[in-house]
Image 1: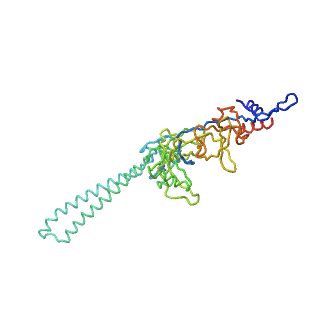
Image 2: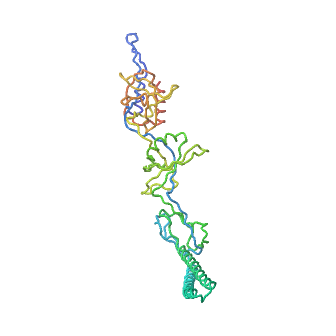
Image 3: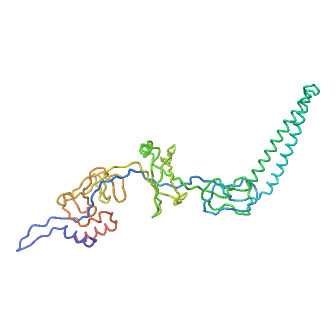
Amino acid sequence: MNKKSYASALLVASFTVPLVGCGKVAVTRERVVPVAVAVASEQSVPIYLDSIGNCVAYDAVDVVAQAAGRILSEHFEQGKPVEKGQLLYRIDSRLYEAQLMQAKGSVKSAEAQLALDRARLERTQPLLVGQYVSNQDFAAVRAAVEQSEGRLEIARGELKRAETMVDFCSVRAPIGGIAGCKLSNVGNVTDGSGSRPLLRIQSINPIYVDFSISENELPLLHSHFSPKGYLDCKIQPLAAGGRSAAARLEIINNQVTPQSGSVKLRAVLNNSDMSFWPGETVRVRIILGEIDRAVLAPEVAVGQNAMGSYVFVVGDGNVADIRPVQTGQSHGVDVVFLDGLSGGDVVVVEGQFLLAPKTRVIIVDESAAQRPPAAGAKRESAKRSGSHR
């Protein structure tokens, strides 16, 4: 039924009409109000806590140069995936390769000296037995061997360092993830201190979702979290039409933030399709449990007065009576009724502003009861009804 027809029905049904015949006034009609209704249903619904959170990279690394030199080439695409160990930058390594050659020569020299000193020790030891060599001379020969062994270790250490510096000239990805915008270009000279990042890599599959709840909600959360050690979550982007995804709450921070009285939580989300991005703001719904056979009806049916929440319920003879109710969490356009309403009860969702207790009604629109009317449409309906009065 359109608004014009609804207003016409309202005019006809809302006023008493005197029936005049032969100069006498007959009995007036009973007042009947046209309304739209919905039928309360029973179904299983989740118990939940809602919050707003942000996506956070599972791993994030700033890639820095550990070798000083000019950047000769880059081997990645900005904003594209990179694999762990993939070559990202190549730095001029000629100076380090020269140091490597020197280190290799030092190792060979130290090895040769050690071999010579060991041979002297082997020749001197029999002479010590026959007392052809004093203990002091023998000790000097043995000390020379130990010194040569030490010099060889130093040379090998320098060789290892030189090899490492040559390796540092090939800058590789420490983790797999998405490469960000480059922070240094080919031709720039790095100082090797690591103070200026070349690139940032973020791993986003899986991805974290960080959010908070009030400390007042913490006992309820703990009562459902502790038995399993996790809770299922539903993540919804703020952007209209964004795809929701399932996540798992796994981390409750170990303190309440004194300034805000909130507790930080962290959920893990499988992000294989890359639909969520670090820094993105999302809606988070923590599923605590489920209410079996909960009573639901459109939230627009609920009114407020000095005694609390109420609805108009249409009973036998199409008589609407007021009934106090207690409501719980919303589920779309519906709300859970914790008390006062049962499955199958018929509630008024449009036209209740004209009702008083024990008012007879006529049902003019059942389909509109399945959606909340727009505020503007309600005002226009009331305006039209008032103009007829």
